[in-house]
Image (spheres, rainbow, N blue to C red):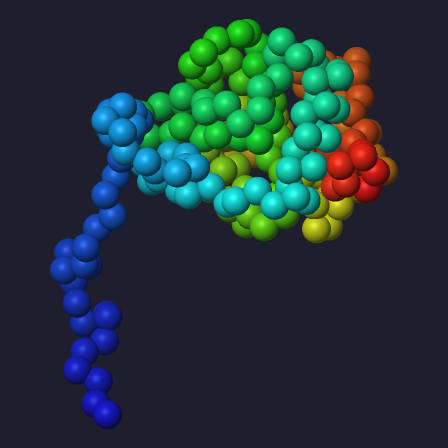
Length: 196
């Protein structure tokens, strides 16, 4: 068998380019009845969201209760699309807003929580960069496999000045409520009765 050509022999202009989307284009398609399924827009790319298994759903319910208890139901949203820009409209598992609005933008978001059992690389990569790029002050990734929370603070460009892993025995102090604590274990309960 002979090799006719290797990829390096072709100019990158010969390769198909992915279609970049804007939030406006996506909303127009949805208004026309397009069914994208469960997706979010990051960096102009439409990503299909991972399906929720029981482990993820129970942890999401637990995290919502824990965050709501400390920061209030009127500020806490679950899976609400955030409208950061024409290229970025993430849909985090839990978000805490500084004010009630139907189209929260970057200045409205104080804390984002993502539950991760199968999407850790994506949550710590593309999503972390997106939240930093738009100035979200604090981003928590609940790593269900390691039983840790990865706490991101101090967004700079597409990175963070502080990234710390804390175990399930730790107590988290959200920047949005510096006098309150949220037990890390309360963000990762994986049974319907609240036990882990």
